[in-house]
Amino acid sequence: MELAFEGRKISGSLRGPPSKSHTHRAFFMASLSPGETVVRDPLMAQDTLSTLEAMRAMGADAQLEDGSVRIHGHPLRAPSQTIDVGNSGTTLRILAGIASSLKEKVSLTGDPSIQKRPMGPLLNALRDLGASCESRSGFPPISVQGPLRGGEVGINGNMSSQFISSLLMAAPLAGRDVDISVLGRMVSRPYVDVTLDMMRRFGLKIDNEGTSFHVRHGQSYHSKDYTVPGDFSSAAFPMAAAALAGEVTVMGLDMQDPQGDKAMLDILRQMGADVRVDPGSVTISQSSLEGVDVDMGDIPDLFPITAVLAATAAGESRLFGAPQLRFKESDRIQHTVAMLHNLGADVTETDDGCIIRGVARLRGGWVDPVDDHRLMMAAAVASLASEEPVAVKDAECHSVSYPSFLQDMRSIGLRWRELS
Image (tube, rainbow, N blue to C red; front, side, top):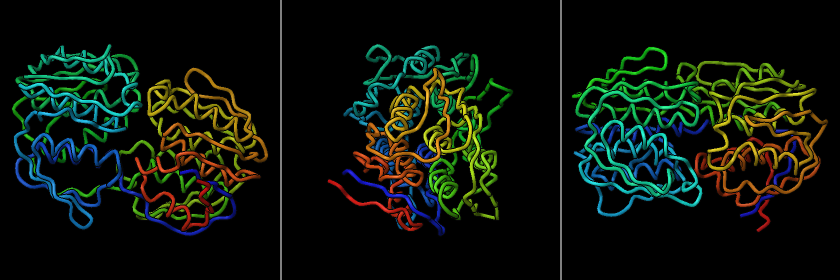
């Protein structure tokens, strides 16, 4: 599906979608918990459904109800068939750790994009903890087989926080205590904090000092009712749209949640947008934007939309500190820069981000988001700063993380029409 987006003034309010990161983790932890867990307000998108189907294949009983998922955890088993995680890197990586606790082999694969996602550091760490692992030179398809012995393990933190979250969530299933040391800089630390917070909510005790973690063996996940909070990563798109072309209130956001992408509010403030935070909602109003320097290391999912904001901000912006962006659904640095070039921005790619010199308006044009949901949504928002429409190929890929994106954006005034 190819869509053409046309910018104009926007206004209104919408409810931000539920958090993808929290939904993944809630489905995993509920499946590991004996008894019944009700996950309320989950994000029902392609990626999170991959997690739910994977856990069903491994023995969990999950029933969809109106606005919730009721999950009965059972002892996990290795399925007879390979589990296909689709496009979900979170499913692949966290499931690899959990599956390594089973005595039978579990095989995992995914779509062509997933098969380019590196797994070597995680598989090496699981081997150090006693599991057997096979892969295609460190890339999917992979197979893992336990039991997970436990012990001490070190892992570099500069590629993906999902590796650390996977080890943490699998650690209570090991035969003895697990000590995890993250070597070097830990990128995307807030996602690890979300994992720790949710593990504690599901009854686990984890000792954490800096980048070292101690998880005692013999602990069990405990069933509980859990409500998924709103997703700041997805809410960043209507927020950015408001900063470019109007005023929008996004409801359903919890400012106390440890999501790192709350940083979008600080970025918008630094750039000069009017940001008002009320209980349960955030209102963003358009203003003249100024260039900004942002370390994206902990907030890589905000890179494409922050780059769009910087494209027409006065002066120079420098987005840096996130080399791990090259190992996302796409090489997000390369393809974000290519997208902005196509639309008329003045942008230079760097090893860990980009440098953007703001122009008065973008030109508009055609964008191939390379099946990357965050690039597609960033391109749609870019139309609000463009003289001509922005045509986006394969626009349906937004459903990976934000199924209601098109409807939500239309409700606040973004215009789009189908080209094919």
